[in-house]
Image (cartoon, rainbow over all chains, first blue to last red; front, side, top):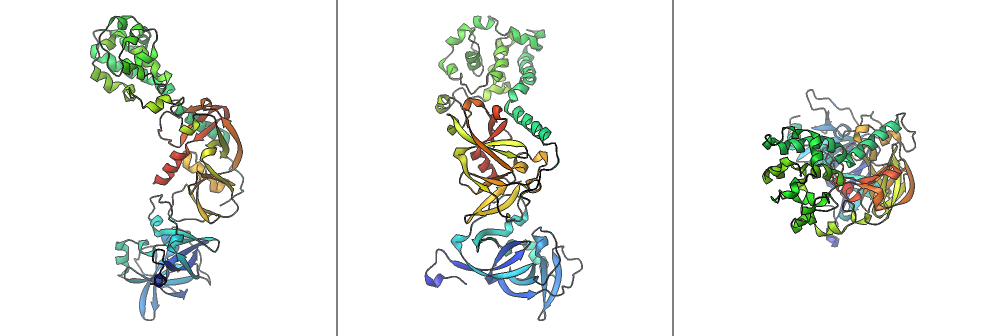
Length: 160
Length: 307
């Protein structure tokens, strides 16, 4: 765990977040869920896969499913660029890739710096956000990866 | 976000006029209800005793209301009706003999326009034979408590919030041609929008995004979409220049233009007696043709909004 608990900051732990860009907004995911970050490479489509699945990639002999994060977040589609990255994450005991516009940096945030967002709306995507935080004069939206998909959807990904 | 785009080419005046009309209709339900409710009141009370007055189904019968028949009848009137008699018709001398609780009902919370048809209907001969149960079921006024809370009685404007019992200042601002007012007491800050909003995924259409000001996240509400969704305005397209913070909450209302502050006397406001479908509306200031926002209710509504 990348906290400063050893320094006695138990009540207000510091977490590291990998930040990425998506549709001009900055998002953060817990660094402990990130395995690696890849440049965009060809993604093989999977017939019959859900719309949010872009396809699969070969990661050193392992098949990894890549999720269309823009589509999952309800954002408009865009072309890939040199900055496009596939972030390999491990969550719900699965390894998947999420495609993002760019990966920026790793930031340290105290738990107390994280604000909750208003719980309004019925959209499932609203649950993806676990909080927001101000960092470097911009708003960082913290994503709860485990809520990005339902249990059934995670299970479905296993089949690819 | 388009901060400085021009207004859409819509007939704003007509739309806003329509909206103000609907606000007023909302504020004066009794005006509409008067004509409509008269019939049900009569029918309900007349129904059980057709033998007494076949002609009593008609409206004119109500005008016979102040007939002395009631006076001569010591028969106890239904509990819910008696208080109304007390308040309404000083011409009925025996009303003063009614129990003490009847006087309490003379609460100013009961609009005179609502009382009028009841006053007239009660003394009609038909009413004498109406069973108390029948009246209490059918009478809309039964909902009015015969013993209103003591503090309400003490307030000069029972339907107004506590801060509006005396003169108060409001800020006027414009949202797509609709003039809104928010009391200075409930006003947090007025912020000129100088940078883009952050978009938060999965939020309702009226949720425009987050605006960072002094390291604080403020959540911006598309005021037009929220309070008059049926009009089809979209502040993202129309443009907005200011956000108005409600109290010290995270919630702000987007608007195109901020006017001045004006001092309002409580009697200038047509206060809303019930929350109805627009809990955010405290009342209407006819003189300024603006809707006065009930900030507490609006914030509560925003916090609980699930659509």
